Image 1 (cartoon, rainbow, N blue to C red):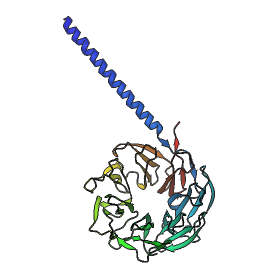
Image 2 (tube, rainbow, N blue to C red):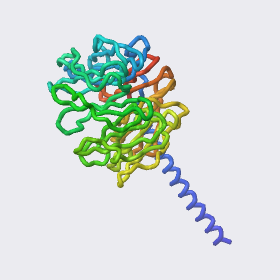
Image 3 (spheres, rainbow, N blue to C red):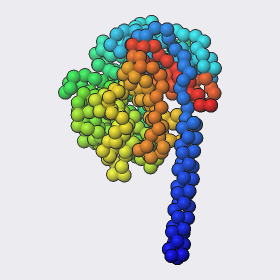
Image 4 (cartoon, helix red, strand yellow):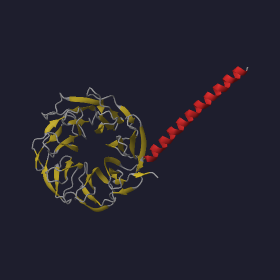
Length: 394
């Protein structure tokens, strides 16, 4: 009887020890989670960039006037001609001066920033929809812009552009995403021939509708590849670059579903395995992540969010300075969302910010008020454009 009682006491003691260890472990995990959540930035403090709403399509950060502070470019219009605007920052989070980029209203989607003529100053390439000319605005170094050259053809149904040195000559080239009729459209590469001039004959590739194209060295061979998401119900591909600069259909890698309606695709190493991954926003399927694999293919998509709230803008950036790529998504008539990545690309902490007005078409991310924390500018259609400051929670 005494022996049985001793065994019961020992078992009870061991059980209490195990429970105590579990409680300590759970408490430690909860403390770590609380600390992690507490260290995430919020985006509560805001500044409206304009007083009235219109059809703004995109936003970019850059130092246009050479004072060392970030300035803002708002690209406007989409299908309706509006003047693009430049907003000069003071380095403290305020706007000290605003003016129009050009003198002619046009149907713009993107203002790509690069030194196109090699004078050391940021110039602007504006992608305009049919029937407007696609223009380069040259910067005098003080934020004064004049119309330079043209690229592409006015009749192209161009949406967004991206910039990369495609032919490795040290000059920034332009990649145009065109959303034309299925079977009748193509996307184009316009090569910079020097001094901000572009070759008359742009190079066609990817004969299907796209609204964005992401340049990246996906297969890590030293050449720029082009990630072309299908916009209107078809297969998306990565077109592989080479010294031939032809981006042939014979050298492409499929990714995503065969009936994609992807508005934006972006590339980054989301799971820290040194292989580029692709994140997409599809207005019918939501936000998806495709892991790069060692055989240069891409995994089946991992659904990060469905399309109950329709995604429309995307950026990949480390927003909490933990050296892990986070996913920033804008929506139609809903707050924007940051998916804070734990480094695996499979687990995310979500943070929503902003209101539910209009549609977020594009983001710019940078330290606009120079406090050491990243801020987010959101370009919105049918709502005012907003700058969200990345403050730390107390």
